[in-house]
Length: 423
Image 1 (cartoon, helix red, strand yellow):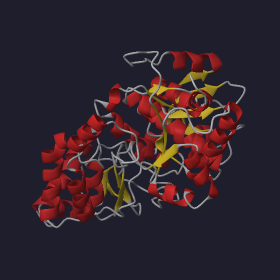
Image 2 (image 1 turned 135 degrees about the vertical axis):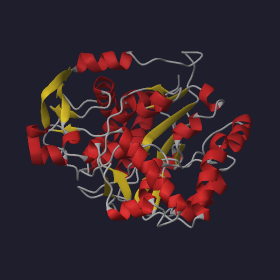
Image 3 (image 1 turned 180 degrees about the vertical axis):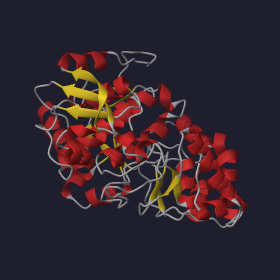
Image 4 (image 1 turned 90 degrees about the vertical axis):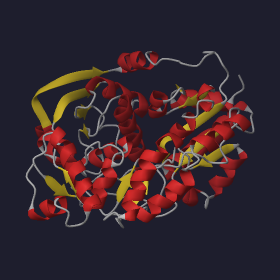
């Protein structure tokens, strides 16, 4: 890798031995992927995925953080972080609560370490840091050092920023030293599409199902998607943002998609059109039958496949403000129709602290509470990592949560039916 004079000096110890190790780590990381140079991180803020202080990595991560703090290293970019793993308002049994306290015992100490290194605000724990309520929204062309898969996917695809799917801690190192290796999705060539996705469906498909189908087919490649522009507006439209957020998260978790282009919708597809498609790109046709096949392929790993659900999680990634509002109206209408006053399965909507604060200022907040729905900034995935919680029959409309946990996926309409009617 070719380094400039400043980078060489850092590597030689001009900013101390710890900063030299950080840069050396990034150089080694870049070498693995054939990066020829390092480039500046240009976004205003960073974001880190390792937001949880979990006991099994206390020595490794905690020790590393202490080394950074002892060297008086502070990130060149203040950063937001993924959601916290626990919330006292989310239902849990006595035994589950004990396990949570053991699993996430180092959480408070770890958060103090994050603050010393550059955590922006106490309230900035969310996987949707790019939403306006959080204020960590990259600009088109910004170079990022992020790792959270759904946030990387959104920043690249919807905002036109540039970021690779980095690993946890690597992204923090990039923010500390201010450089990342130049390869993959940072390059023009790396953003070209190796797949054309031909969507042949008579109405807007379920975002979670479509994202799942795309992710499982293209894996880590970049897809160029046709057939959706007649259903979606531009990326300033709230309903389009909700669709793209959920579609992208499913493609990133059911595959490893870090960037997608949607014809006539996403910024690079608008600017460059089909010139983004590589000459040897493959084609994948998605119709109603293919989406049904995908849905039917999901395994059900509950011990009792016919168990009555004990909990419903909505919002992985975190819901937008409009998404919480839309779902509040949807549940209110469904409960009125079913004759129920409250949801029939304990239900948790997850959203960023900023979105929750904004929503709590509206009349709909009272309506949501009266329906028995819990609004929480928790990470449902971290909740489900509790081995006791993982044994519970949990349902979700998130393909990301389904992929990483024992929860069971249902479409939006199926979720409404299940949580507003008695079995």
